[in-house]
Amino acid sequence: MLVNEINTDAAVRIFNSPYMRLCAGAKIIQSNIVGNLTIDLNSCVNRSTVDRYFGLGCFSYVANSHIGRYCTFGARVSVGAFTHPTDWLSIHEIQYRDTTDIYGCSILGNGANIAPVNKPTEIGCDVWIGDNACVRTGVTLGHGSIVGLGAVVVSDVPPYAIVGGNPARVLRYRFSEVVIKHLLSLNWWNLSHEELRGINFSDIDSAMSFVENKNNSKLKSSLGL
Image 1 (spheres, one colour):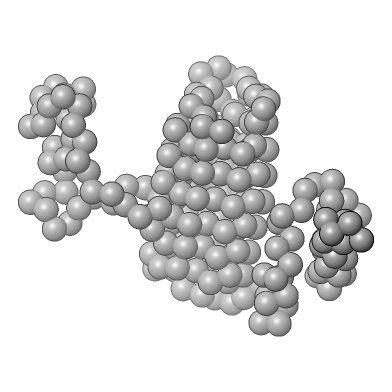
Image 2: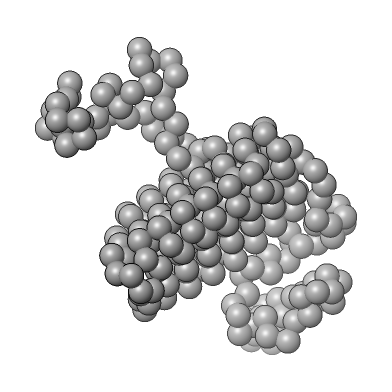
């Protein structure tokens, strides 16, 4: 569902169909929202596609991104912000859009906007971005990956990798290669909250068995078996 909402109230606002929880100053601009979303104080989601169970911390900005299920981004995070041209005469916006409303004058008129198009940022499911991290537009964060506190991500992050630093590099992986391969085949994030009831999240082997049994049951049910 295409959403344009700004919470100008001091109190939290709750929306339904789809469910959205917006704290004071939170904004959703020209974004496709599936639902089950919470945005904290003075944060913004702009021109993005967001799947279920997404949480965004305070004073964060997310733009031009495709975000999977069960993702959590921290406070003061920047993801997918516009990248200014570096091979034009200038880096300034006077080159590519009508700036009358911004500076009181403009080289271009009639609301023109010929800004270079940035590649979207692709974010998988079950991704956590820590406080003060920056993710460059156009990169891909694989399923299950973690971006550490204050990291600056300028290249793709593999599934289930934990990255940190500036520029960010892989510090380690959350699980062994065998477990990661199994998790990627299970796509557990496709299950709803109701379907996940009873799972032991803290035991990875038990959790994978639970999801595998649930997926097999759903497959048999769809086949009428």
